[in-house]
Image: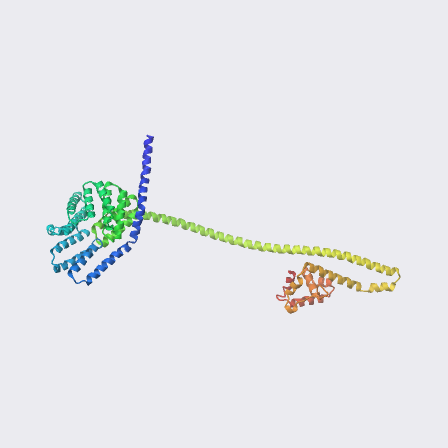
Length: 532
């Protein structure tokens, strides 16, 4: 029992896979057919040009026989392309008949008119016209044309009828005329083989018919004849139930029909029915639409009837599929719109946060820069303090040593009772002057060691003719020494005056004079000096 179930499941799985593999092999041919349909106008253009050229030649010809021949060519060209025009050229041939005095042409015109009526779906009219033909009066070539038209008309009539008994009657009539066609002289090998294969199919010898047709297919026949062979093969494979080969042959026939500019055909709509059964609704709809357009353009009623009988079913399925596709597309569009909106909101939110972060980074960068400057200033201030403390200690020690030496010199004068010299030394200011001079020299030297570019940087802040330079025997001039103290942070004029031993007015004058020589803003001049 378990084995049987497994076998059934295996068959169920393998059958769809086999169908898919068959359909996959047909796909390249169907793609070629799709491309031919899309470029259908390009393939009908040569036929239009050919027919246009024939019409121009007809206008310029005077000879009645030549006119009749051109009308016959136009009739043949329009027969399966535009039946109304083909009928119009039959009428033109009728008008020329009185000038030619040829009884056979009267019979030919009847068959021509019946053939057009058959293409247009007027089978009863065609049958009535063909009944007026006298077969015994026809030439062998015209007799073959008569038999082929009779077979085609009865075959179309059988296809058109719905009632089974009537359909069978007309199929038997068409079968009889196949026998007549095969007895006609001048029948080509290909035509004889095709008719023989049709006869075999009617008699149930389908495999034999396929063998004959395959042999004809490989004989290098013309493309137009190859289309007839492929279509007949498709009918044979259809009788056998071989859908894959039937679709393959129908596709080949449809490609040939469209490339030759034929509008009256059955291959494309039959292929559409089979594709619909396979579930390919899109192609079925496309092929039926193409068939309907061509049937209307050609005025081929049978083909139009065949298409319109099945088209509503395919059209409904196609519209349902389109509606489902549209619903899915709308759902996807709504989902995509929602995602897009969420993405936009996210982008805006990220943009705002990035902006805030950028602003925060900017503030942080500014703060870091300020901290760096403060640290640099603190480090510089620390160096200045260290340097000045060291100098201060050295000066203090040196000053103590000098005071000690000065005290000893005074003590010696006192011990030697040199009172006048002692008073003279006490009253003298030379000692103070020398010490102050040494102090300024040490200050200038220490300052320039800490700020070696101070003089050049200070002069950059001044106009060219207001720049100051120390004399050759000094390191800093009075102006430079005042602003050196300002650079060190001593901005109070009283403190500067006390430090340098100048009057307050003198310090004010020097500061005002330098401000007036500044290049830029005079109010920020001293702040710029402090930043050197």
